Image 1 (cartoon, helix red, strand yellow):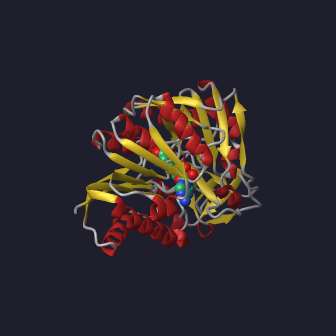
Image 2: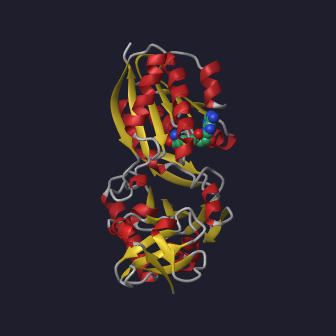
Image 3: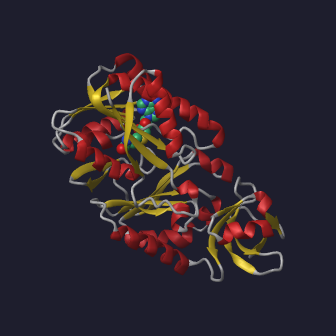
Length: 384
Ligand code: SAH
């Protein structure tokens, strides 16, 4: 087993539960194989815990556990059981939930979404990949199938290729799930990320509770129609816009499955707002992808949100609401509200902040890892 020495200055951080160490926080005792499991020790040799080590990665150590104890099947079973049990205590009104939310569930780099008996996983670091033979059987035991969707760019910095494929059983092309009385078909194999954005479940519910019969809703960046379907089921007249064809087709199928009528358009949301959108909406949902994962991209996200809000507000009826979602921890609630105020001022519209919703509770935002609070939606009313 490799041994990594944690410098004194970083020990407090580790003991407070922050799950990552930087290069400057550690000293390698010997050649550490990328992706290996290592014992973490203080300079005096005291054992601090165990972590996954990848010397070339931006954060070369991800902490799996503090104190004594190993990392084996029993460890994973305990973490996955706890994560599972927590999800059973929250009333999600759905047969789909995020079972494991990586670092926030003590499982760095492992994302597991549970869709009505089928698991869809994402593996974000090499150490977790190498431990697959240990954790996969536990998922396979409890699920009809396990499919991996690790086709995301972040793997490059871990020295990993993108991967997507079947790990156990057979996952259907479309998994049917239920969410608050609605049925959604999840394109787990060819949709975005794991196929369905579970983190917006509570915000979709918030919308459904507030729309009134006949309200007009413009759902921009609609994906498979999550917000549109929720609003249409409450009697709203919805139009969904997405740049890709697959979400639009899935959105139509979802609407039909629920006996709802929603119009879907394949278009760039920025262009659509600037060139094609009619006015008179009661609600405009802006749920763009996380275009800023890193600090240096933050300004482009701010610009994107400014532009969207600036172009959306004139299409809202007075008293209508724009829902501004930012799904990266790089942009906090205050930052987002600042941008909204700026955009409103620039188009001469008065606004009020009515509510803020966060990622749903199966995506825990844990105190010791600020990055785990990533999604916030601002519900903003156009006053006049
Ligand atoms: N609100 C959705 C999730 C949105 S995910 C839900 O509740 O399920 C973001 C979506 O934005 C993706 O489907 C992606 O295809 C789409 N997208 C990305 N860039 C876009 C653009 N410029 N115009 C329109 N859609 C875009």
